[in-house]
Structures are given as C-alpha cells and as structure tokens.
Image (tube, rainbow, N blue to C red; front, side, top):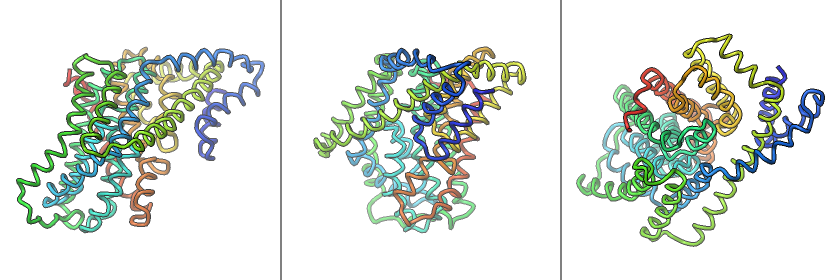
Length: 431
C-alpha cells in the first residue's frame, strides 16, 4: 500500500513541475526517511552498484549514438529536401501535402528517430505550405505531430532500445518485430487522410500542378530519398543480417550521417559541436532519470510494492487478456501525464515478471508497450510533440487546434495497437 502511495506522490510532484529525475529520486529518499523501521536510508547502499551496472550497460550505449546521428542529419538539410520534393510530387492529389508529410515522417523515423527534430522541422517547413494551400489547421497539425512520432515505433527507436534493456529482450529482435506495426500505422495515417479529403474536399484541397514535368519531379524525389535509404540499409540492414549489434550499427549510423553531410556539402565543425552538446544534454537527462528511477524502485520493492502489484494482477485479475488490457489502459492513461522514459523505467519492470508468469511473448508485449508509449507524445496535456509543434508554429495555429487535430491520430494509434493485439503474428512477418 505504501508503494502505491509512493507512486501517487511522485505523480503529484511531476504535475507540480518538479524535474522527473528529482521527483522519483526525491520521493524515494522521502519515504525511506519517513519509514525508517520498514526501509531506512540503508536501502541506498545498493544504489552505487546499480548505477555502476547502468554505466557498464553495452545496450544503452546505442542511445547517445542514435541521438547524435539524428542531430547530424537534422543539420544536413536532408529532411528539407525530402519534404520539398515529396510535397511537390504528391501535392496535386487531395491531401497530397499531408500524405507526403506522413511518408517523410516515416523515412525520417527510420533514419533518425528523433521526435523533437522531426516535429519542429516539419512544423517549420510544411505547416506554412499546408496553411497557404487552404488546409484545415487541425488536419495539418495532427498530421505533423503524428508523423513526427513515428520514430518511437519505427526502428531505430530509442524507446525500443530502452524497452529491450528493461525487459531483457534482444533489441535486434524488437527492431525486426516493430517494422510491420510501424508500416501498419503509416498506412492507417495515409488511408485516413485520403478518406477525409475525399469526403470533405475543403479540408485538404489539391495543389495546382506546376509547369515542371511530373517525370522531373519524380526523379528529384527519388534523388532526395536515396541518401536516407542508404543510411537505413546501413543501420537496420546490418542488424537484421546479424552483422552488427544495435550498438555497433548505431556507430555505423553516426559515420554514415557524417559522410552524408560531407557529400551534401553541409558538413561543418559547428555541426559536430552542436550535435555533441545536444547529445550530452539529452543523454544526461535520460540517464539521470534512470538513476532516479533506480532509487525509486529500490524503495518501492523494499515496501513490497512489486509483490502487491504481482498479487493484484495474478490473483485478482487472473487472466492473460485481462492483464494485457488493464496494462495497456494504465500505460495509456499514464501517458497523459508522464513521459515514456519514466513509464519504461518505473512501470515496465514491475510488469515484466507478471507477463512471464502468464506465459506472454515478451517481444509481442514489448511492441504493444512501445506502440502505447508512442501515444504519450500526442496525448494532451503533456504530449511533448504538441509542445514542439506549438513552439515551431508560433501564432500560426492555436493550442486548441493542435489538440483537436491530434485526436483522430490518437484513435488511429489505438486501432494499430488493437491490430497487433488481435493478430500477434504480424510482428514476425520480417524474420
């Protein structure tokens, strides 16, 4: 019971704006002091060994490498060329600009995986164009934020790397398993845009065709797609072929991103400096949260919080499917208020042994969690993708329009989640 009180207290601190690492770490220290007869500060004697284990974790080394790769590509202007070429290619179709945004989002997801960079980039480039061509602001905003978050499920994904480490499953297996669900989600986005623009032509009107021959536009688009495709093949191909581990392939991706930047003549040492500094900031934030979460889990387990949750799910619910449905509902609701990193480090470790007791496929369960966590970037009031777009768009759109526009895409994500839940074998289509 005290464990549940700990979690609620941490949630209150988060809602008050306390940084995540300090919210969870501070609550752990507070409850250890308040209940010295049960736990006491001596529980933290194990913390240095846990932190040392984190520092030695080979899998987590992929996180800063993939972040660095994405930031280098952000500065290489690759995304801008992609958006411009694809926009002109699909523009003459109803909803074409929105469709091109989704496709570019999927390509960026498979080559960078950085949500903030993707959303801000597309917000700065495609939002003004869509509004200029009389797209409804709601559809434009929803398309941009949803497309930008595809990097959380389409590999290489930081979410999948973190889940692989937390759930003790192969990151390479998770990458393979996530490809088809990512494609399903991309298809649902495109289908929704086509259907909506067919039913309501005023929502996403077609652009006027330019004088440039369509063949030239197609060739230009192909030329813009080839560099990221080469990087995708280098990174994911090396993993799927068994040539490299995810960490090693991340290093290959970094070299590939730098070489692409050199080839496009956008390379500069300022780019490397910017990418290195931002990588240190983001990686430090992630690992500080991991340390705070480790302290929290030590005290939480000392209060038998894990046993309480295990007993509740196995004895009170007693069914595999009830466990899965309740788990997905809890993670989805938590995503409204808590970031994916906290959920991964605090909630998921509690669920792993329970899933194992029900005989649930850990790869399938991890993919379900990853798809659910992707929604946390879109769900108000604390969806980070919504903040990124509002910051990039300024006064062009209102917060209300962003919230309204993202709602259908959240429902599409839940639809994709249901598809993977009902047809679990689709995650193994790419062996």
